[in-house]
Length: 84
Image (tube, rainbow, N blue to C red):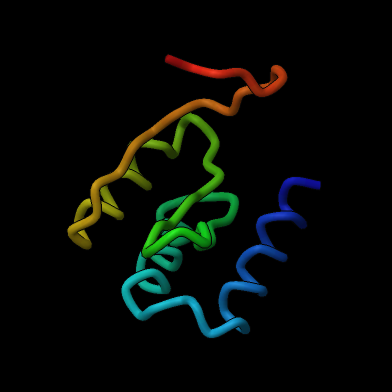
């Protein structure tokens, strides 16, 4: 499931030692604000969160309150493609 995937992503990020304190704070803030789950993208200090639409603004605001730049986007269900 998607929930299991994001839970495993978080487990790996925490135990690998890559998750900084700032990222951990972002993950926790996103989850408290209503995210299904959140973790670290393995490129820099980047947090991603899976959020139902009705909680998207709350999660964005929680991340921005920490000083993050937050972007809301939808999941793309189609195949990968080049965007120019």
